[in-house]
Structure formats: C-alpha cells, structure tokens
Amino acid sequence: MTVLAIIGGSGFSELPALQAREARRVETPYGETSAPVARGRLGETEVLFLPRHGAGHRLPPHRVNYRANVWALRECGAERVVALAAVGGITERYGPAVLGVPDQVIDYTHGREHTFFTGDDHGVDHVDMTEPYCPSLRGELLGACARLGHAVVDGGTYAATQGPRLETTAEVARLERDGCDLVGMTGMPEAALARELGLCYATLAFVVNWAAGKGEGEITMAEIERNLEVCSGRIVEILTELAG
Ligand code: HPA
Image 1 (cartoon, rainbow, N blue to C red):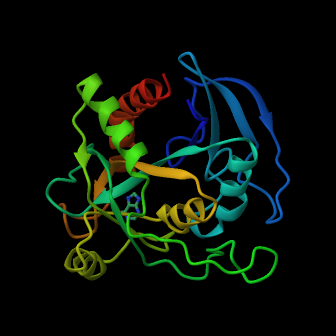
Image 2 (image 1 turned 180 degrees about the horizontal axis):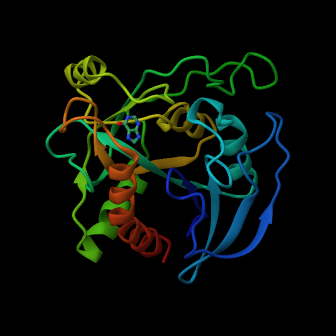
C-alpha cells in the first residue's frame, strides 16, 4: 500500500481520529508549510496529515503556501493525497451536506505561486491535466463510500475561486454557465502542483452552503458550520475506510 496523505481544509484543522505520533516541520525550497506534517494512524494504517489553513485556521486561501505543502508531503513519503474541501454547491446534485468526488476543475485563481516549473532549478515542463484528479484514488474514495453505504456524487467540475470573499450571484451564474458544479477557494493550484510532483491526488468535497444566489438569502457562517458538523463524521469514516 502506498503512503496516504490527507490535506485538511476548513473544519479540518485537526483530525482527532488521527492518533498522531509526531509532527515534523519540513524545510522546503519554497518556504514554510501551513503547519508541521503530522504522522499518525487512522485505524490500523499510517497516514500523514497537513492542515491547509494551519493550526487554528489562520491562513486564508490566497496565502496558503501550496508549493511548500505539496513539496513537504512528497518529502515525507506521500504518494497518494486526499484533499478535503468545503465547497459551495452550484448544481442540483450538489446540495448542502452532500459529499462528492469531482473529476474536473477550472482555475479562476490569480496571483498564486502555481508551478514548480519556474524555469529555474526545475526547468520547464507542461504536465498533462486532461484528468486533473487521480482516477485510481477517485475510485478508491468512491469505493470506500460504497462499502460504508454513504451517498456520494461521482464527478463534477470544481470551480477554484480566489476568495477569501464569497462569490456574487452573477459570478456563480457564470460558473454554472461554464459547467461548474461546486465552488471552493483552495482546489487550485494544489491539484496542479500535486500533478507536477507526480502525486496521485483527489478531492473529497463536502457542500457547506448553496453558492451565492442558489439558496435563499445570504450565506451565513452558522449555515456553513451546521453543514460542516453534519458532514464531518462521514468524512472521518471514509478516510479511515480508505486508509484501512
Ligand atoms: N464559495 C467558495 N468557496 C466556498 C464556498 C462558496 O460558496 N463555500 C465553502 N467554500
């Protein structure tokens, strides 16, 4: 079995189910990771865990050092990476509290350090992103959900927006016209960087609100926290099943 790493998103600054044995601060050529990389057990299996927003959720999406995080996970031996992602739901099948494993992504972010291939030390390469998420890990996630009897949406296009503000109604309407099903702020450049380092990367998304203009009225933190709470138990079960 290859080493599994989990990148925790909103609501997952910690993973209490992880029996952490050590947390290692990893030096990278790109600066500091969001937090030390924790190594521990999920069920019977050793996994790595890195909270994307740092301890106590202090880093907003545009200030996450994606390159350092992805680099450090590979440095620690990760071969498969599951990215947890709290998202807004755009299309009908991605309503609140729904879990999904997207199969496509559109990058609307800007100004982020988005490549290892800067033409300096690592030269230039153009990685293939026809399928941006690792098909085998997507299959493993879907299989884990099936064994547990947890409903999950297979596929969908993730819109990666800049944040930290939420979108306008018109922006979400545009994302929908573009073919997006769900929207989050951290899916890129993370997925592309993982591909550049040859890591098998997939996202487990969970819907914490209807995206702007898709539900009733404004999006509230209370609603987001409520849905997070509803999803978190299932997510830990899925990760444990996947690791096992
Ligand atoms: N938009 C962008 N990112 C998000 C949202 C949203 O509505 N909900 C959770 N993350």
